[in-house]
Amino acid sequence: MENNTNAIVRTGQKMYLCTCDALVKVLSSKTGRSILTAMVTADMCAVRAFAESSDATGTANEVLSTITSLLGPGVIVVGSLVALVGGVNLGTSFARQDGASKTEGIMTLVGGAIIGAVGAVISNTELSFGS
Image (cartoon, rainbow, N blue to C red; front, side, top):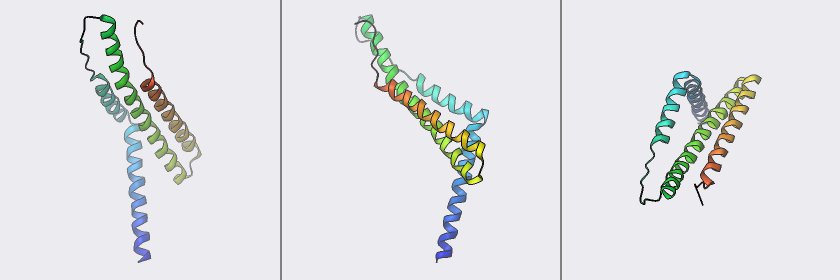
């Protein structure tokens, strides 16, 4: 029974590492980054702005508010994805005992955290035109 459990755990670990390696390879390739960039760009371009009054400043403030409310979470998602890739890279480098990959994984993980923090600042900041 214990041998079966160990075999299942080892199989699960191998599947996880293969999945993580595939994710890192896809996001490390130019095509993968292009697809991710296209998806994020399409998400950020889907902005609806409706003018409810003839006040130009009020309309501009509504548009700016809509942009920041959509941009902030988008940047947080991108930062989270970058941090996830960095974490996967760091984990696989520990499995392979590769020092250079550990450094790269840590830098990518921290970079993703910084990008996510910028997204949180954008989400929590209110910008406006005029008074």
